[in-house]
Image 1 (spheres, one colour):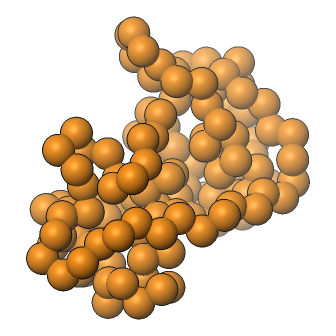
Image 2: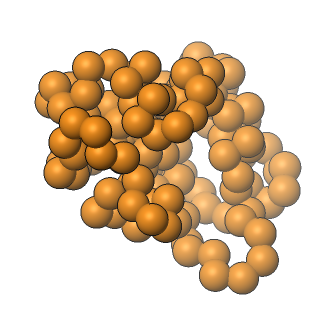
Length: 130
C-alpha cells in the first residue's frame, strides 16, 4: 500500500513520467506494477487499515499482498469492505475498519534519473514498510 501511494506521488510530482518508468526503475514488469497500483482503488478505510497493520517480525504476515489484490478486483467500496471482513486467513481478526476517511501525507523521496527507487534492502527509498 505504501509503495502504491509513494509511486502515485512520484508521478503526480513529475519525478517520474509514468508507471512504465517506475516499472523500469524498479526492475518489475508493468503488469506487476499495475497490481501494486491497483491498491489505490481500495476504500480509504481499507487503505488505512493496511497501512497500520502491526509489524510482523517472525512468521507469516496475516494479510498478504495477494489477499489484498483479491479485494481490489471489486470496484465498489461496500463490496471491498465485505471482502475485507471475510474470515480468510484471519483478515477480520487482524484489524477492523474504523475510519471512513483517511488522509495520507505526501511522501517525497529524493529520486534522480538513473537511480533505483529501492535501497539495498528493497525498501522504498527513505521509508521502511511493514
